[in-house]
Image 1 (tube, one colour):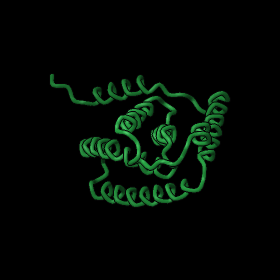
Image 2 (image 1 turned 90 degrees about the vertical axis):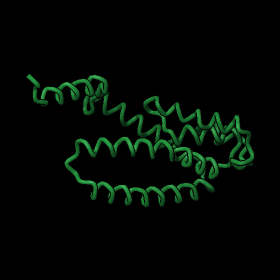
Image 3 (image 1 turned 120 degrees about the vertical axis):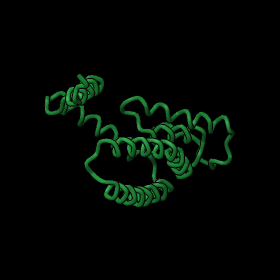
Image 4 (image 1 turned 180 degrees about the vertical axis):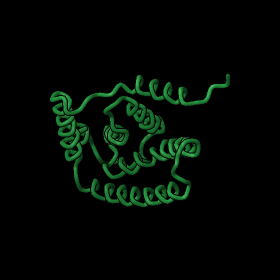
Length: 165
């Protein structure tokens, strides 16, 4: 991230690059499926690699997130409607508040990136990784196997269901 931000040309706007490069920017999002990868970090870095200005890269990265956020929010809404004790009113209110706070945060970040490098995020990610490794190594934190956790959760939910016999 640092090397691309520091050494790539930064003179293009998003509408100045080819559709094939935009396709690769969208494809870069898939790296976020790997634990530890930041979706916005990957897409901003890929955009910077293609010479897009920092603030334009951030704006495009956040626009790319809209489909993922809408789809995951819809999925979670269905899950909430089936199993949550919290009603729709508080959920809708929280969603509206989160939208405005997120919008304000993204607007501030895009403005900030117009005049600052990505080194702050590089330092943050390295520091956070070192802290997590230290906490894991010391035994203060334990890694969780999500696959077995989901299986156990699914099994415990099935055992609570009344039998049809």
